[in-house]
Picture (cartoon, rainbow, N blue to C red):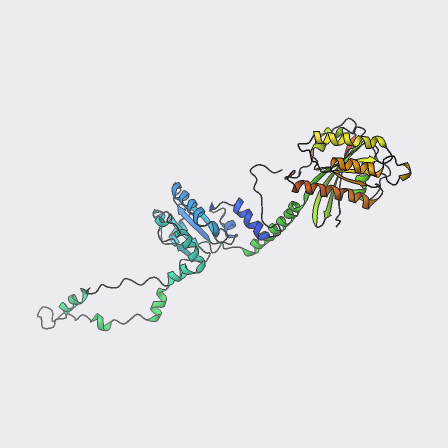
Amino acid sequence: TLEQNDIYYMGPINSYEAFHTWINEKCVPLVREITFENAEELTDEGLPFLILFHDQNDHQIIADFEQEVAKQLMNERATINCLHADGQKFVHPLHHLGKSTSDLPLLTIDSFRHMFLFPNIKDLTVPGKLLEFVQNLHSGKLHQDFHNPPPPPTKEPGETTTIRPLLEKHDDVGSGDTQHLPKSPDISQTASPPSQQFIQQQKTNPPESVFIHLGPNFSLFHIREIFCLYFLFFSLIYIMKRHRQIALLGYPGVGKSTIAGQFVYKAFLEEYDPNIRTQLRHSHCVHGQEYDLLVIDNAGTDPYTINHGEFDNSDSYIIVYSIDDKSSFDMVPLIRDKIINNSASSKIPLVIVGNKIDRTSDRVVSTAQGQKLAEDFGVAFIETSAKDTAGVEKIFLKCIHAMDQDMNSGNDPVPSTTTPTKLTNSKTSKTSQSKESACTLS
C-alpha cells in the first residue's frame, strides 16, 4: 500500500532509461564515499570519478562539497560519479599527483585514463567553477590544456639580463688578471634552439589513472545491466497491472460460486459445497490493460456476512439474485444498503446480476424489475446464466468498467493492492484459493 511519504514515478513506464535514471536520482546519494571495499563496484558503473580527497576529520569540506555538487552538478549526475575519500588511506593517488597528505584537501577527476587536479580548492564554492571543471573534462579541454599550457610571461620592455655583463668581465682580453683564464663561451652564439625531439619529450601525458586497472568491467557491467533490465521489465509488468478485488454477494443458492467458477475456469460447476468461501485469482486483459482480479465468493447461508473485513476491502461488488426466486431479489436492496453503510463513499462500483435466465419458464422476477432497481441505484445491470461463458464474462467487464469510472472520478485514487485477511466464520468450513490467467479483448 502507498504511504504518505511515497514518491510516485510519473515517467513513461515503457522506457528503461527513464526509469533507471529516476531510480538513481531517488535512491543513490549525490555524493558517496569511496573505499577499498566498494571501489571496484563503483568503477563498474562506468562513470568518471570526481573525488574529493580530504582529512578524515575535515567534515566541513565534505559538507561544502556536497552542497556545491547539489547546486552545480544536478544535471551532470548521469555523466560523473561524485565521491569523497579519506586521503590518509588513499595515499597512493596523492603521490601519483605529486602531492601528500599535507596538501589535503584535494579535488581531482579520474577518467580511468588520466587524473586531473582541480586548480585551487579554495575556488570550490565559487559559483560555476565545479561545473566548469566537469564540463572541461567532457569537452576534452582538461587534456588539451595539459598539453598546451599558457606561455610563460614575456619580459617587460627595457628589462635586461645580468648574465652577459658578468661573462663579459672574464672575456676582457688585455686585462692582466684575466688574460690566462679560459674564455667563457658566448651563450648567445653557441646556444641553439631546443630540438623538436626535445620538445616532444617534454610533452608528457597527465598522470595516469590509479583506478585504470580496476576500470569498468564491461562484461560484468553488461550482465548486471541485463539482469536489472529483466528485473525492471517484470516489475513494470506488475506495476502496469491493475489489482482489483471483487466480492460476489447474494442470497444462498443464486449461483455465485458457479458464476465465479465459469469466469475463472470457463466451466459450469454442477456440484459445489455451499459452505466453502472461495477466493479465486484471475488475470484478465481488457483493451490491452492487464487486470489482476481477486474474486471472493460469499458462501454460506447468511447474506449479511459482508461485515467481514475481506469484503470491506473490495473495490467492487456483484450482487446476484435468481430470476426464479423472488426472495433473492428482495434481498438485493438490503445487501446494497449494507455495502453503503460499511463504505466511506455513497457511490460504490456495483453490478446487479439476474442469474439463471436458462430457467425462463420458472421466472418470477421480470427483466424490467431488475432494470428498474439498477436504475434507482445508479448501477449496472445484466441478466445471464452461469452456464453461459460469454454472459458471465460480460458481468466482469461491466464490473471493471464501473471500477475504472469510479477511480477516474476520484473516489478511489489508490486501488486495493493487498491480499485480504482470510475469513473465519462459523458457517465456513474452509477457504479455497485458486489462480488462473486469461486475456480477452472486448
